[in-house]
Length: 497
Image (cartoon, rainbow, N blue to C red; front, side, top):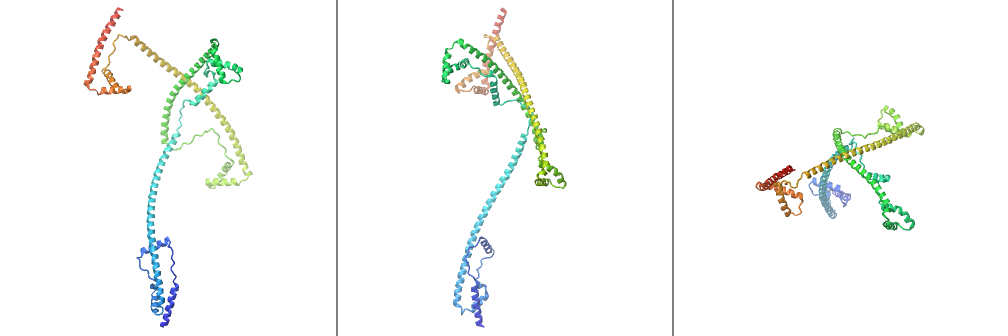
């Protein structure tokens, strides 16, 4: 029985050694490392039992077979110790890896927190921008409404500077009176130019002009007389035309100014009314269409779809479905089936073209009539402007005459022997103050000087002002005495006369 037990134990030990595979060294993955870390954190670190210690049956067998298999057992124990050490090393490495992974995890969490904060800040900024954009859109809508403001004011017919210059050039070309007259020397040169050119055909412009200049010096006063008379006549005509034009431009300027003032007031009133209406009505206003303009004709497909619409809508079809079905049916149709619709469309197009031609002719006539009305208005405005200018000239002449009359009366009434009225206390003070200030501040402006004098006068006390008041009073008494003597002398002269 003992022999059989020993044999069984040997077989069992051999089987266990052969059945166990050697551990392979391999690098653990991130998931495996996390799994091992969780296991270690959950359970406290306990000594890892060897595979032999785990099996109690194997221990009994080994104790029985110690006598026969003693040398083999020593070899197996060394192998177990080396495997145990390698497993412990692997565990330590895994723990190091876990610590590193934990540190990296903390770092990534910190980075994620920072990114979350940044995202929050950006979201707040976007919200603020959204609010600002809404405000801007509201303001933009208001501005668009303001653009829709269409005044019904008749603006004065005012030309731009370029248009005026072009009109002047065209008028000068058409009207020779508006051209500046050429002097007698140029008129004489025009007559003599061809003769000099025949004499010297090879001569250039400079040579011919030098020859003519030399000959003009030898021309007598009698020969120059017709050219001078012609120049004088042209000059008079030119001056008359220019004076008339200048007068018209001045009159038009006056009229424009009056019109501008009127239109500005009307515009302001209309704009205020429009603003009040726009605040009440927030609805969008559509562009005004000309009701007389003919409508564009429908195509062949639209004519077909109009026919089919009623039938399809009766079948409780949606608008989109109706359009889709009509399109598919139209594609499936051949040329013969499409023929009547295309003929209808062609006839409608021809009719539309005829109506459009008539509409265009009507528009052209309206434009021509408008142009004529504008020309007539322009004439009326010119007349109004000239009347305004005449009124202005009359008022200016009246003012001028009244001024002249007053001056004449003063000259007639003014007697050189009559005593002059004395200066006031302030004027006496200002004379002396002016001298001192001019010495202190050389090159001072007259306006600043007057301002400084008035400030100094205000700063004076009552005692200081009394000095100047007394001087003015003395001068006034002297003036009154002189005036009495003058009046007595004039009265005696008048009695003698």
